[in-house]
Length: 162
Image 1: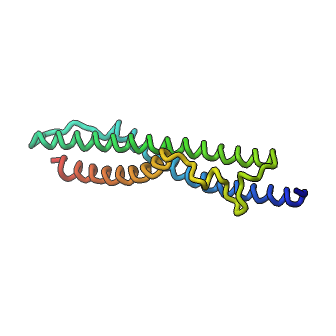
Image 2 (image 1 turned 180 degrees about the vertical axis):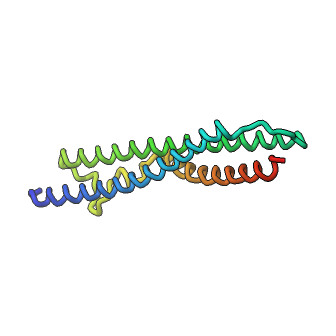
Image 3 (image 1 turned 90 degrees about the vertical axis):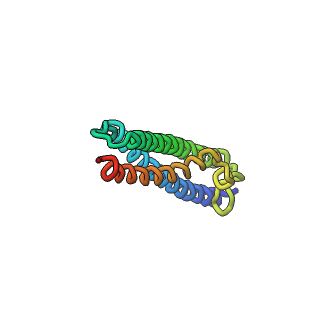
């Protein structure tokens, strides 16, 4: 391999790594923003959310209120765990891609990189299924959490606050 070919592949792999970094950076930003929002709401719910009900017309209101509140906290806690797993996978994936490209550059072994610029390890589907599930579940659980938070607020204002 001549020097021009080596420089072309090196530049090509650098551009490819930059595009991967943009994807992982986007995932990291979304997951970290959701994590900050979820944990802030979780702490507010823990400190200010539960209050003893004053005059209870029906004991089932108190039981329903406590169950709804506990379910809201549980959904938020699960959401935070999924987001933490997503962030961990994002960091590990970025390190793994960097190592593959660095090793390919150092050893001159370009077999790991296809001609169209996709790393076999990344596009080949080697992301752990657990982390893919955690990423999707974190987005779904965040939406479910927001819906339950709105329902809890609605019930707290109009039904439980008799």
